[in-house]
Length: 220
Image (cartoon, rainbow, N blue to C red; front, side, top):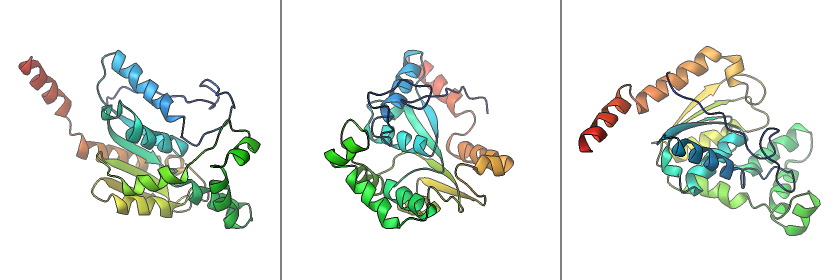
């Protein structure tokens, strides 16, 4: 599509730097690594971008939109199998392991307690339930494309459907029919590519950037 791309690593992902506890913070600290990438772009003359995020990457992208001082640089999001509610994910994974789903809900609550978080190897409590709730209640000012399989056993499709309904003026949800988690492109690369291209051309028509650059030049 003629776009420049930046592949962003985040802490503890195998390529990014390690945090002191070397544990995932479920997007609650990792969003600052995406913010650092936005700063990298801005320092080199970039002013806007569309962020693609898979699974936890989508959580990180949403947290950045909601919290970063550079959030205005993000003009759109493409999210694949997005983690939107950690409690839903933990319940689904408990069920997949043939454990009571209540165990997933319990873990989501216990992570916010200092004693349990320390036991889990975290350097401090991890509150994820409030941010998850805020995503549904807060406003969404940018367009979002969600690509998600109905058969995702790890991250429930139903959560994406609820999120799309909560922000139906801004979110397009494209359903896939494949097993596993984050396998949408692998199962249907043509359909995936066409969905992304069509969404992008609706929200960012070709020639829009050139027209804006010309207008900026005239105003200067």
